[in-house]
Length: 228
Image (cartoon, rainbow, N blue to C red):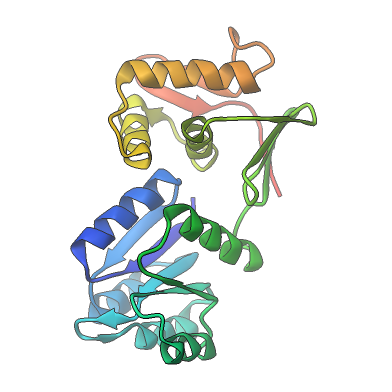
């Protein structure tokens, strides 16, 4: 699981970003100030940082400088200002990308995946038997033929792929699917999505080998898998 550092002082934006990133299978640590971010960087290793340029006790540029001195990870700046000076300053400091608020969630996830892939920190293809998932392009294939999944079906598969060693409780899956969909996802709905996903990616949906049921708890990814 990839660990991201989010440096954002706006509580509402930080909450929504946290929900989005957790639903995508990322681990996340949030810092609301420059001081908090510097302290967190001393305690944890990260795969990527999302940094707001405007912070209550300074700016995100100084956090980027600290990262460049301690951890060789991609940095994406979040800014409410589209002025050329801020963008150029960030890029000249070594930032990998910038996103102007308000931004579309899928665009942000795509930029994160691109930055991780360029840095060599992101799996590009997941395979299990004749199932392959292009994590960068979002393309799922079974036996070489593309499988078309709904947004929530793909999100459910992605959560499992990003947690290959974990048993995921129904409660966690419900919470993450609900956050991603922006609407209530019931326990019965989760059962339906699991059934539909198995029908599309399993050789024998009645005897699943990819999405395994852990009775009384939830689900886990089955079998050996390969990531490239």
